[in-house]
Image (cartoon, rainbow, N blue to C red; front, side):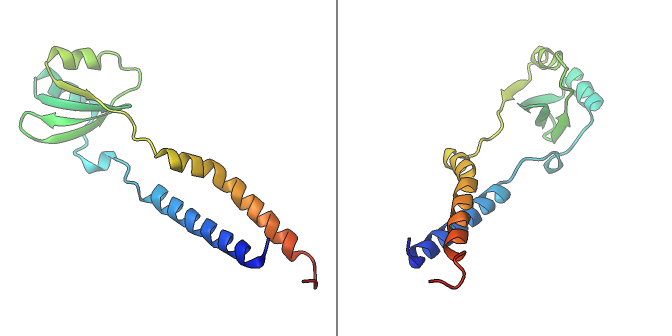
Length: 134
């Protein structure tokens, strides 16, 4: 492999790694700090008092809206089996959401990229390891 092609492959890999890192670290992940965080017992009281209008359930996090328009977020215990029936009993609009997944190409890239970098590094070392030849 000539030196020009090796350099092009190296810089293409550097650009791909840079794009991958930017995409991976720039995706906004929803956090509880974005909404009004309330504790679990307050949430149960609001449900029992028929103050919860709608909720979105994502894993063990519930975000939603109260009847007065305020938004809230609460962490629920993983083993709580009564919360869904309690919400249904109060006619709360329930939406079940799933964790956003990364694109398929990013999954493939993240599994192949380390191998490509190792092979590229191996070729680089083997071609430059000849001492003064070349």
